[in-house]
Image 1 (cartoon, each protein chain N blue to C red):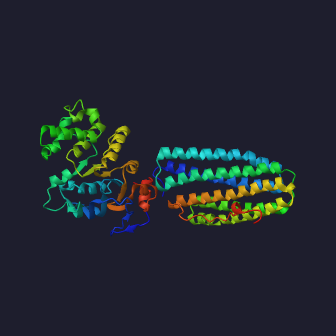
Image 2 (tube, one colour):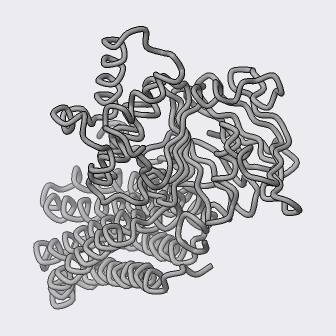
Image 3 (tube, rainbow over the protein chains, first blue to last red):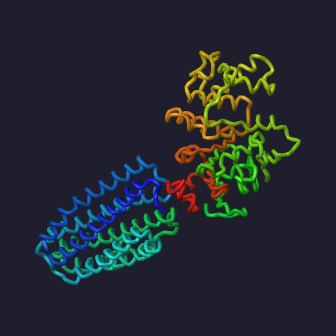
Length: 235
Length: 272
C-alpha cells in the first residue's frame, strides 16, 4: 500500500534505487579486481582503484538521504527498518568496494611474478561464488525476499572452506621455495579479501532478514574457516 | 515476544507484557452504543499498573469512547449504553452500588483542551480535595496544593501568583494545572484524552516529561493522535480501528515490528 504522502514513497524508492546502484558498482569492482589479478591487467586494476571513490560517494549519499528521511518523516515499523537496513547494507557494500580496491592494488605489487597458474584458479573460483552471493543478496534486498537472504547466509561456509584449502596450498608452496613468498602472501591476502567479501554478503543477508521480518537470526551462522587453527605440520 | 495469542472473538493480536506488571484495569468485551449505533464492538484489554498505556487509531475508531468508559464519563452522554466488564482492582465499576463520584476521584481525567476553572490557581487545585474532604486543615490543604503543583512541574512557575486566575496562564501551563488538579485528589489512574494536541512542542515536551515522572505513582492511559508521542511516552500501545481493538503490545514492539498489517499501515502513514 502507498503512503498517504506520495513524496514519502518517492524518498524510500530513491534510497532503494541508490542501494541497487552501489551494489552494482561493488559487484563490478570485485569482478574486475579478480579479472585484473588473473590476467595481470594493470590498467584494469587501476580503474578499480580509481572507481572506489564513486562507491564512497554513493554510500555517503545514501546515508545523508536516509538521515534526511528520518528527520523529515519519522518513519515507523517496516519503513524504519527499511531505511536502517539500507544504511547498513550501503556500509557493507562500501567495505566490499574497499576490499576489491585492495585486491587491485596487489595486482600492481605482484606485477610480473606469476609462478603458479593453479593457485590463481583457486582464487578465481572463490571469487565466482562470492560474486554469486553478492548478486543474490542484493536481489533479495530489492525483492524483500527473506528466504533468498537465508540461502545466502547458509552458503557462506562454502567460501570459508575454499579459503581454508587455498591457505593450506599456499603454505605448502611457500615452504617449497622461499622465492614464492611475496607472490603467495599477496595471493593469500587477495583470498582473504574475497573471504571477507563473503562475510559482508552474509551481513547484508542478515540485514535483509531484519528488514523483512523485524527480527534477527537467533542461531549462529555456519562457519568453515579453519585456517585460524591450521599449522604447518597439520597442513 | 514470541508468545502471541488471539484471545477474543475479534481476534485482537496481543503480545504479552514482558515486564509482567500487575493488572490495574481489566476489561472484557466492552461494547458501547450511542442510540442505534454501536461505536465499540467488544474490546478486551488489561491495563498494567504504574505504566503508561497509549491508545492510538484514526479518528472515530473508538479510542476516546473506550477511554471514557474507564471513569464512566459516557454516563453523562444521553443515549450511550455500555456493556461488558470493566474492573478496577477487581471491582466492577459499573456495579449499581458504586459511587460514581468516588470512582472519578480514583480515576482522574485530563482533556484535550486545558479547562481550568475560572478561579485562582490555588483554588483550581484545592477544589477536588475540598469537595472530597481530603484536607483536615488549611495548612493541610495548602500542602496538598503545593505538592500537586510540584508533581505537575508547575510550582516554580506559579509560586508567586497562586491567587491569580488559572485562565491567565499559558496553554502549556494551564494543561499542567489541569494535571495538578487531577492528581490533587490522589487518584490511582489518570486518563488523558489528547493532552498535548493544543500545545506547542516545548509545552508538549514538558507534559511528556511529566507523564514519564507520574507513571512511578499512577496508572496512566493516554489517547493520542501523535504516533511519535505514543512511541515516546508509553510502555504499552493499543491500536483501535473501526470500533475494534486490532493489536496491543509493548510499545517498542508495536512501533518497530507490528504484527497486524492494519497496525503497520496506520503507523507508517498509509491510511487514517
